[in-house]
Structure formats: C-alpha cells, structure tokens
Image (cartoon, rainbow, N blue to C red; front, top):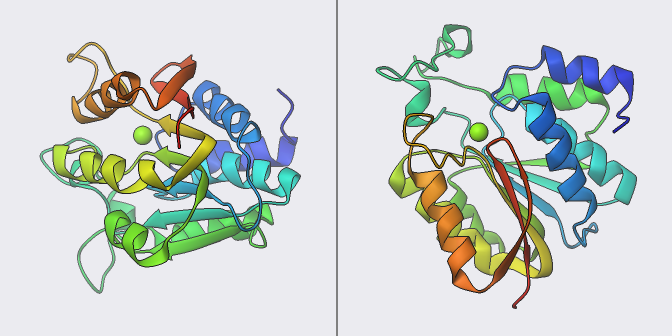
Length: 211
Ligand code: MG
C-alpha cells in the first residue's frame, strides 16, 4: 500500500475512529468498486473526514465522485454517557457538535474538493431524495439500532450489481463494541445478495452479486 506521504500525514492528523490498517483496506475495497462520476461512492457518516480521505483519494485515481453523507451533528455515541465526545467540536451557536467545518477543511487540505461532495442531512432522507445508484456504500454512521438499520435498509438497494458494501465497527464479541453494525453485517451475509470479500479489523467488505 503506497498512499502519498502528504495524504498519510493528513490522515494521521485528522480526528476520527478509523485505524490506518482498516483505512487502507477501505481504500482497497473502493478501488474494486465500479465507480464513476455518475455512479458514485457513498459514505454514510463522514465526521471530520478521515475515512473520506481514503475514499476521496481512490475516487481521484478513478475519476469518480464521493458523496459524503452526514448531518454533521454527531451521533448519539458522540454525546455522554458514551466516551466519544470531542468538546472542541461543539458549536457555540448550537451547543451541539458541528463537524462540517472540520470536514470541509480536511477535504480542502487534501486537494480533494473536485472529487468529494458533502451532502448534509439524514442518510435515509438523502437516499430517498436523490435516487443515487451507488458503486460503493460505506456504512459508518450512527451506531445505534435505528440509524444503523435505516442506513442498511435505505442504501443497500441503491448499490449496483458488482458494487461494494463496506461496514465499519463490526464486532462479533459484544465486549468489544455495539451490536447494530454486527447485526447489519449478518443481514448482508445471510441476504444472498452479497459475497464477503474482505475483513480487516472491524471493517467488513462485500460485493453485491444480485441486482
Ligand atoms: Mg466507525
């Protein structure tokens, strides 16, 4: 894996929860997606843009587009009692997290603005409103039961045959992490629509084999 050193430095400096090994696997999955400008890579849950850098770099190489979907208000696990609150991201206007500015700055610094489009809103609403046919869907949004299942239900029908589904934070062992990402991972496995093609840490990758 040889990502440009400037990009790996920026990735390391960007706030987020995707370890390097899993990010490189995400990049590898993305390169296998049948992506183009009209058949984008969709990321659900961008936060400050760390994972988007891997996807955006792949998109640049493929001359494709990343649609980065996030309401940028943080997920439930970014607020107490969960341990993932970053107080520096709290907006003085709303007293809630606002990751949009950090996200935009990440993408600008990487020079990836021509290939990365932020779509601000709830992912099921965006899925309904846009009619995107996706080459790849990366699910890493809210990890609660409802958001996680809504992401799965809303976006997997949008994946083209041969497209890539990636799910982050898949933990078989309940002591390592929450259940919903693992539940949708099982749903994909048992649906008959997907073939599992990669597993690195808590990142799982599938290819869609049925339209
Ligand atoms: Mg994650």
